[in-house]
Image (cartoon, rainbow, N blue to C red; front, side, top):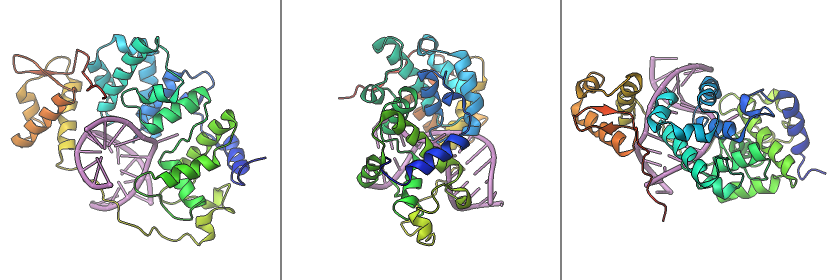
Length: 300
DNA sequence: AATTCGTGGTC
DNA sequence: TGACCAAGAAT
């Protein structure tokens, strides 16, 4: 007997509407799942699909990844965005190789300790790759619960304790069912209960949805600030790193000057790239992608 | 707790 | 066309 009238329709909907994604196949390795989750952080599925296949083809295991240079991870990352993720994924592979015998850990706390693995990704890998029972709260699930349970169009800006409690209350007791529930609610948010233009007519829980029953009131809260991009340090960093990625060897300062004219911002961005370990300055004044393992600050 | 961190597609 | 958005993490 389900804990909530939401369970049966959502699980039934998922059974016939789930996308066939590589990292969901029965033979997908935990490493494949982990790589997919890191790539999917703030990056759409359509862009992750080819990148994930290429990544797993090149580095089928954490040990294969750790044996290669971190700069190669940055290069292979291509244009997925947020390239520090590539560096952290390489660092995670190194930790997995040294501390976990080359096997992705199944324990939430051990996953959470890996570089670049936060609350969401640790829960997602433990749940999807190992069938463990965890609250998996991503932007999709938060939006589904905000609407279906709380009757509002969008969840709060940051995840709250109330949201976690709601999600835990709804989480099925059996680990295998909890894992299916987690991926099913995510998929519902991704395909039907979308941020803009939700397809309520196709929703399996439209009759129970508190938001729809309330007449779909518009979002009434603080305006979430939009992120500008043109002219920012982020755009500048992106331009600079693209030069490094597409070069076969070290690049000169003039190579970098060619893609960003404003000198002070360019130097500042370059400094932060070096500080992040994404770029290595050489003694002769040129720059390259990192060859040695980056040092991550120890956690006190 | 509020900021920072890429990139490209959509309506 | 430009604002919005896409399976967050780290600080």
